[in-house]
Image (cartoon, rainbow, N blue to C red; front, side, top):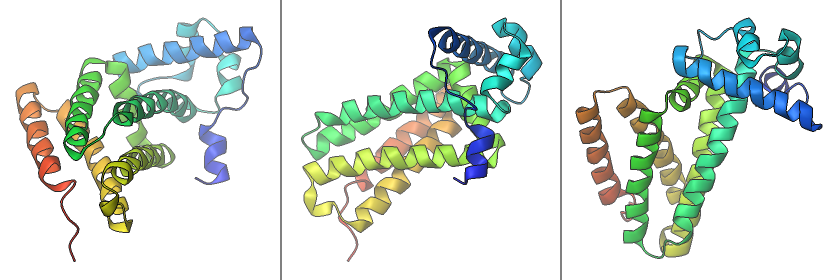
Length: 210
């Protein structure tokens, strides 16, 4: 991501004092509430300041624009997801175990986004801005790294450049399938995800083509 991009979607300053940290948390919590109710596009900085009960100058003190708020919220959620997935795969010892954990990961990821409007709104909000869209791609790459590390540990004979490409592709497609499912009628969404999990079971650890 270019320096200019980081300037417009990054924090202007990182709070150090407890009072400043609390104020930043108030802003982000208020942003989550507004995004859950209206979505990212409808959120206004003045409205956010009122909801957080802080001066508008305090909002701009930390965030140059709305996209920076979305990034801060996305980063927080993405880190939690990456830690949860890493923990889930840390005890995997076989291919069968890995496939079960992958299926479970899809289920809990879908449930979280389906049942948390703020969670979903932040994720979907990254599609409204090219710099934010790159965050999703970077997030997929980190999840792919967890997948590939797991393959290297339990099936080292498959851990080559082709598998690296496969884990990256599957990581991105898992996110895309969940994104599709959460905006689809619930019963159809479950069937979509079940079909996708069947594809993963048959192809994720399939031998590489010669």
